[in-house]
Amino acid sequence: MDEIAAAATSRPSHPALITPTTTLTWAELDARVEAAARRLVMLARPGERVAIVLGNSIEFVVTYYGVLRAGRVAVPLNPGYTSDELDFAIGDCQAAVVVAEQAARAKLRSSTPPCVPADLAGPSGDLPQVSADDLAVLLYTSGTSGRPKGAMLTRAALAANHEQLDAIDPPVVGADDVVLLAMPLFHAYGLNTGLGTVVHHAATGVLIDRFDPAASLSVIAERAVTVTVGVPGMYSEWSRQPSVGAAFGSVRTAVCGAAPLAPTEAAHFAAATGKTILIGYGLTETAPVLTTTAVSERGKSGSIGRPLPGISLRLRSPGGDVLWEDGTASADEDLAELDISVADSEGTDPGEIVVRGANLFSGYWPDGRDGPDADGWWATGDVAYADGDGDLHLVDRIGELILVNGFNVYPAEIERVLDAHPAVAESAVVAVPDDESGQKPHAYVVSALDPAPTPAELQVYCAGQLARFKLPSIELVRELPHSIIGKVRKREIAS
Image 1 (cartoon, helix red, strand yellow):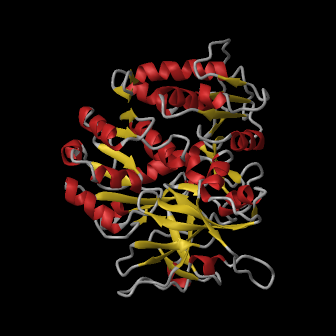
Image 2: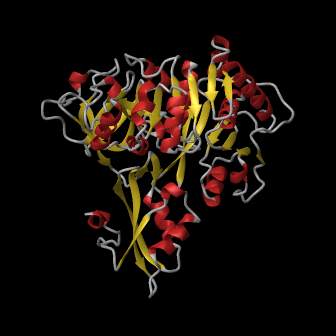
Image 3: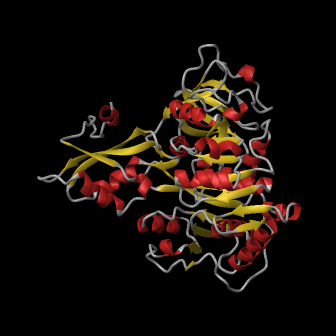
C-alpha cells in the first residue's frame, strides 16, 4: 500500500489538499490517483518515464502519485522552461508521454512523445506490483557541462528522508499540521520536503501556484497554516508586510532551505513575528534534506545545523583526508582509527561535505554515473566547516554552480547562449549575492561589434532561451582576464 492509499485508509475524511477553489479529502485524492494510475498504465510501459509539466495544483499531485502507483517514473519539469529546455529534458529522459498544462503544451515542438492534459479520460488497465528499490523520479539538475542531468531517486530514497526527519525530537511536522505548499513541486524541496511530508503524515497541504507575499499571508491566516516551507526570498518579503505578525500567529514551524538565509533577514523575520526559522541544507541528489538546525541550536546565526539522524557526514580536505565527521558514523567504522579532527573551541578547517545515507540518489540518468561510491559515500561539491559546538556552516561551492532560490544555474549554460549572439565576442558568468534569492547570475560580456549591444538587448535575447530564474544581469566590459591556456580567470573578475 502506498502512502496516499495508507492516508485514505487511516484518515479518509481528513482534508488532504486545499486550493482557493477546492478541498479534497484523502479518500477523494486516493480515488483520483487510482484513476490516473490506471490511465497511465495504458500510456507508458513499466519503468518508462512520464514527464510532468504542471504548476502547483491538484492535477500535479494526482499525476505525480498516479505515475508512482502505476510503476512508471515521474519526471517533473518546470512549466517556465523554454522550448529548448523542455525539448532537451524530454528527449534526454526518453519520456513515453508528457502530461502538461496548456501553456506548456504550446512550447513543445514535436508530437513525439505524445502530450496529454492532466484530466485525460481514457481506457484503464491493471496496476503492477512495485518495489521500494524501483526508480521513482528523475529530477533534473544542472551539470558541469551546463546541460541538466537527471538525478535518479528510488522510492526507498524518498521514503528514507521522511524517516530521517521523523527521528527528530520534537518532530518538525505531524499529522495535525496544515502545511503551506508554495515551493514549486517540480523541485526536490517542494516535492519531497513539502508535498511528500504532507502525504507521509496524512496531514493537510495548502497549495499556492504563484507566490505573492501579501496574498500568501492572507492564505496562511485564513487556513490557519501551522508549517511554512520556504526559501530566503519568501521570508524576506513576508518580513516586510505589515500583516506578517498576525498571519504567522498560527504557525508553529517555519522551515527555510534551498539557499543560504542571511542572518540579518532571519533576525528581521524574528523581530516581526516572534518566530525562529529552522534552517535546512540539502541537494536534489539527497532527496533532499541532509542537515537542519532542528537537531542543533535552532537559532544559531549562519548555521545549517547538523546531519539528520541516519545520515553520516564528513568534511574532507582537497587531498582526501577526513577533517571531521559527525558523531553518527556507521557501526562498521571506528572513528578512533580515522585520524579525525573533532571540532574544538576554534572549529574545524573548511572541507568538502561528503555524505552517506539511505536517502542518496542512485547516480545520474541513465547509467548511474557519478553516484555514491562503493562504500556509499557521495561528495556534494559544497564546502563547510564545523564550529566548536559541532554545528556546520556553509562556506562555498567547489565548482561554479549558482543557487537561485535553491534552483541550480550553471554559468556554462548561460555563456553558451550569450556566446551564440552575433554581437558577443566572449562572456563569463559568475554568482553575485542577492538578498531575495541568495545568489543570482551576473554576466560580463565583451562585444564583437561597435556600437556594442545594450544589456537590455542581450537580456531579451537570453529570455527567449533561458528560464526566468537563469536570466543574468549583464555588464559590458572591454576584455576578460585569461590564464596562459586561454581560460577566463573568473576569480579575478569577481574580486
